[in-house]
Length: 107
Image (cartoon, rainbow, N blue to C red; front, side, top):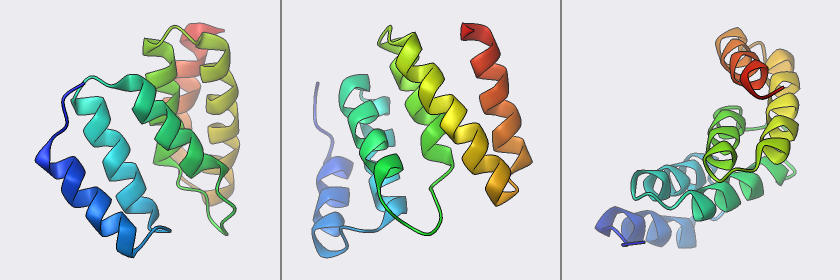
């Protein structure tokens, strides 16, 4: 997949702030935009698995979508279920509803 100048910019920022969840998410979204779902899913799963006080809830939905596009429905369902729980704990009812809707299409 082609690299974009924005990927290089985000990676440079991540070199300075490797724990910045928003930058990690942004890099994954840049890969999604470039059609590289495998890299996007990998980056999102790394972000999800980080040990932090608050999970980055949007990463669960995007990871689920990327995994579905890769034909990995079982993995997508597992991530979405975790995401529903994370969204519920954080009070993000909108994200929870989106993930429940997507999960219903694959179960």
